[in-house]
Length: 152
Image (cartoon, rainbow, N blue to C red):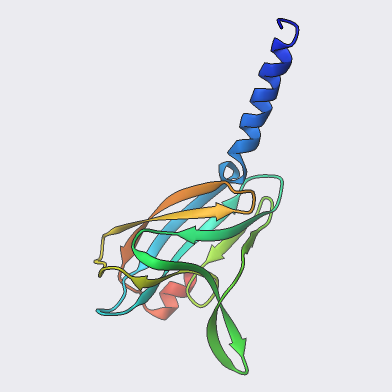
């Protein structure tokens, strides 16, 4: 048994490293949720997701406790009309970033359970293609004029 102990320890360390997953290589910057107008059934969450790792990562799911449905979305031009559509994932290239912003990729919080107010914090769990996840705290902010919002 003593001869196998170093192998067992090495195996456990390798397994623990594998469990950490992509989320350890991901950093999230400037997460926020747009304050929804009164009685609005949905709103969006925005952030910059950076991949400090050496392998591409896909964001495959987002979840939060304040809405009944959470989806990854993008705005697409359909016959000259901009429409929001769910997407299966968001690619985050190795050493790169994905910018989730108004008019582009974003997280939709659909069927809100209760009204939000400016300054509230929404915990959003981001899940990646290897099953690892990262929770971010997104502050609820009043919408900015379009020109400023687009620069975010």
